[in-house]
Structure formats: C-alpha cells, structure tokens
Length: 202
Image 1: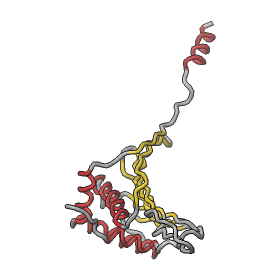
Image 2 (image 1 turned 60 degrees about the vertical axis):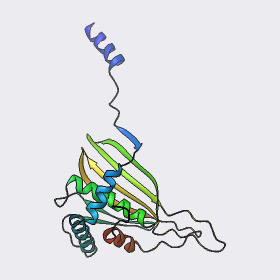
Image 3 (image 1 turned 90 degrees about the horizontal axis):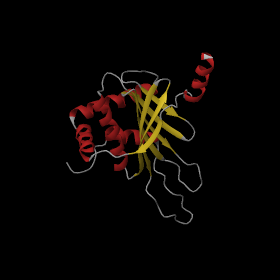
Image 4 (image 1 turned 135 degrees about the vertical axis):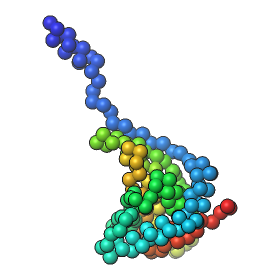
C-alpha cells in the first residue's frame, strides 16, 4: 500500500525534467561605461591590445597562432573573426574591447538595430551572449543604381560561460541581391576596427 501512495505522490507532484534557462532581453549600457571603453581603446593599453590582436589576426591567416588566439570565419555570405578570452585580457578589458568595436562600427556610419542579452542553460552551464546588431544607413533607391551595403550587416557578440568571459565574435553578413552593390572588402572593416580612434566628446 505504501508503494501505491508513493507512486501516486510522485506522479502528482514530481515535476517533469527541469526546464533549461532560456531568456532574452534588450538592454543598454550606461554612458559612463561607453565613455570608459572609448578612453581605454584610445589609450596606451587599448592601443597595445588592439595592435596585438591585429598581429595575431594576420598570423592566423598564415596558419600561425599566438595568444590571444584569433579564429577566422569565412563563408560565401559571411566573414568574421573570433577572439578567445586569454591571459592578455581581464573581464573589464574584454568588455571594453566589445564596446570599442561597437563604437567603431557606429563611427563608420552604421545604425544600431539592437543590443540584447540572451541567457541559456547548456550542459549545466549558463551561457550569456551580449549582441550588438548593426545595419548600413537607410538609403533612398536611385533608378538603375544598386544600394550600398557597406561591409554588410555587422553583429558583435560577447559570450561568457558561468559568468566567465569565453570569446568575442565579429561577423559581417551580406546580400547577394541585385539591388545591392557588392560589399566593401572585409579586410577594410578589420583595419577600421583595429586602427581607428573613436570620434566623440571626451
């Protein structure tokens, strides 16, 4: 009899398997955080880290690797790179790099479409993805002239696992539609991200 009531209790009150965390929200950074990232990227430390990543990006194209490791993404309609969180970074400088890349994309004339954060539970780990998404400025179509897509649509992501930085990714996706011009060379975008200072008030 006891087994019967145990089984009945279990069937009534035992919850099904735990539902994995899956949450997405829009958010904004404070002005002070954006300003800190700008000051950092234009300062000695930021310029040194930008130069190191640029060098490692060039090395990766030659099949060489140095820390922090850079991974190159190349497909028919998308190009990009990812940067592994390694010893050269702290959580703060990694966040500054994420924001600095976003600010440099805006400086190229892009429009920010969204900034969101997604939390997911994967294999007992919580993954957080912060993502900026940018599009070229809207343009009125001109007869018989394709629309400029600049470098394509640009996404910048910062991924953390269990609250620890993991990697940062920049991805440009582009249209193959006849309505659009061919995208500008991706390597130009890379150079802009690593070399340009951010315009704005100090």
